[in-house]
Image (tube, rainbow, N blue to C red):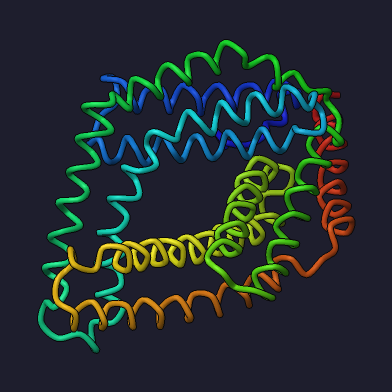
Length: 308
């Protein structure tokens, strides 16, 4: 598993390998060495950035607070130029997906004018960010600088506490965010929950080699929950754009229908996410962390037996 621990490596070596691989991959996406479309490059580079920030949070207790703040800010800012490009494309994907979901309720192509305007908006953003503002070059420079500082946060001790406290902290934050979203399901609370769920999902992927079969359900649940919350957030962003610039997006009837469908779909997604979240986060953080530590202990014992 590329984005995971390896039994033949020390924890330090695994963390460094994973981080370097993701940085190299993101760098390749934003340079001429990458294949495929610019939209795919944006998606892949941002995904690597999220995985790197999850890895940084995993080892956070093993590094200094100053180093964590510096690298977290650098990784966040590295991907920031591409966020607007990603969001512009996702608005179109979200509209298409919504139309497919409610295909039996929507006749004809009432949202064609809206889609046309979203396509124009995507072209405007892509031209400005990637061509005029040289977004890829900005990201490439940021990643190159981050690579030079890699040893500052990947040289962690080879013990469970180097990653155990980090995954426990993210699990606790996600569990707390679930409670806040359940009590007050605002766009902001749901988005905050989604961020922590995504971090947890990537951290569990890193740790999955400790017990691949046993941890697979956790990884799958976290991945599915992140997708549900991601779709909900994309719909919320689309709704906000329609509300802010109503005169730009077609007739009033089409907009009203689309807003109603968005609200209906978001309700479905949030109900499913809440049920899945209750199952994924049913254990208190100490219980969850002890379970993973048990996997680590057995893994280390098996590795020692293999070496002898």
